[in-house]
Every structure is written in structure tokens, then in C-alpha cells.
Length: 152
Image (cartoon, rainbow, N blue to C red; front, side):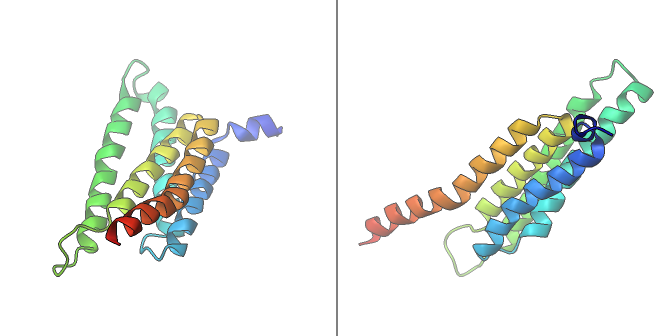
């Protein structure tokens, strides 16, 4: 099996999706968040798996079906429930603000990264992972610098 064939195989795609999701989860673990490597990795892997399964099944079930788009719709809605759970789980009744929103958004983008890998858009998935890591880290520092100066 040549490297080119492996890169386009569903096994490589699922491993890559898990790896990219886990990269985002590592940062979240360092930030002390409850959703970490395993959660982010599994979200990306699951999204990739559903896309790959729909791609493999489409020619067998109905070649003219828009089923791949329905898979994306289902992923977007399903990950919304997980994100909502992350927000509700972190809700503290003594606070006057919501928490867990970044975790929910991170899980949502991680599903998108997994779907991109599943569709074979690997450069887009890798780039999106890098951009998301930038948002998790660099933008956190900028945000805290700005909000810290506003509190003084």
C-alpha cells in the first residue's frame, strides 16, 4: 500500500480526526476544562466516522440521494446538544454569567474538523485545528489583557 492510498483511506481519516481533536483537547486540559483530550478526540472521530459511513453507503443505498448533506445537518444538531450539556453542567447558580460556552464552541468546531477529515479535506482540517488552537491560546491572552485592564 503506497502512502498516497493510505492517506485517502478511511482508516487514516479516522486516526487523523482523533489526533486533531485530541490536540485541541490537550490545550483544554491544560486550561483546566472538564472536556479534554478524550472528549475532543472522540467528537472529531465520531464526526469523521459518520461522514465516512455516509460516503461509503451512499452509492449502495441511493446514488442520487443528498444524504451527505443530511449527515452534516445531523452532526451540527447533535453536537449542539453536547455543547448545551457542557454549558448547563458548568452553570453555577451563584454566578451571574454563563460558563462552558468556549467548551461548547470548541466541541462544535472539533466536529467540523472531524467532518472535514471525513470528506477528505485534510489540509482544511489541519489548518482549522491550528486556527482553533490560536483561538484557544493567543486570543485567551489578548482577552484577559483587555478585560484585566478594564477592571482596573
